[in-house]
Image (cartoon, rainbow, N blue to C red):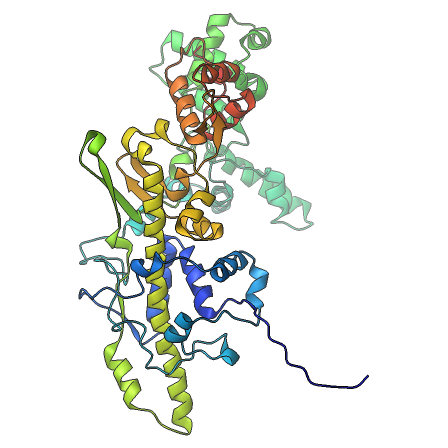
Length: 530
């Protein structure tokens, strides 16, 4: 075989650092976006926040409406697979050459000459809100997140009550340990023997003493408020609450009888109570049907999770990315879509630092420092551009959604029409994966409330007229049927399916059950009024 030279031309696609950052920013939520901006402001000295209103950047929404090249659609599709991020090839275009002086040999860096103009100027871009800080105007304003987290926990509530008990050192330590062993619902899931085994060694005498202290502590724990805390299961939790009612001095004779029946019910298997099997409970408890119904009604007013109101649930305040307002009334109504200025960061390149860098170009050691700073300047410019493109894409997608779902904005969920990601992608010339990223964790404020953008997408069910009904509209119709039902004879899933067929919607019983469970509505047997 004779060695030789050959020339071959090929075209490949790759994800440049700029495109990777653009894709990553697009899928971030508002909170994550704010954190990303904060981090970039801390790391990049060329980036700053300003209160001045800048001119609109050239690479904005107007340019975003231009048709998308097939090559870019392929790149977007490739972005869906993380394994392809390591490709060593890149997309080249005249636009990229203008915006970024990256060389083909340095496709994974932000290097630039430091003077490439990314826009008419390096001025700030964004809305009317600040991204830096918490948007608080003074010490008198409190961070709502911190306020939400300031709620007293179940453990703190119980520890505070335990301070009023005069206990020995051993019993107090055991009580504090049990309090910390409770789950969020207030239950003690582990047996006392298992807790003791984790604290003692092979000394049987020490184990017996500690088990005694834990038993005393558990009996004291069950006397604390909220009633039912420290129970091992649901039956014991309900029993503790019923016994607390039974011990009240002002309880009437009829109430005492009902409590006694409820205690008998709680002594039976919980699955019988969950099914509301009245006949079976009458046999097991040996009391009349009417008494069983009164006992079940009383149990229904008890708290199955004593620690529920102390649960440390992270309260996320949903801030809409897009706001839809109605202009006009009736058939002349129009809906205006705009970005929420409160979530749009106002960023600009630090002019003093950028100008100083252009004027001080040196050699030797200074050349390497100049290259590093030049790279940070280029990174700041690309970050501003990618943020702007993120919000422009969100606005374009939101406009398309509002145009397609205009009936919803006029009449509510019952007027929702079927919509899939592919329809919006084809209309805007974007890839379906891009629409998926845009509609995830982005919210729209409407006259009917605030919804995630994904809410407006749904599959369709066939109708007698040959069209399709949105699954969202079908869910709303099911919810309407159930809210208007007779509680003495609640609607079964099969009956709801038949009612939908009368409306011209072909929806099977299993589909009704799936939608009902998605709405967190109990089955007919549990909705029945006893």
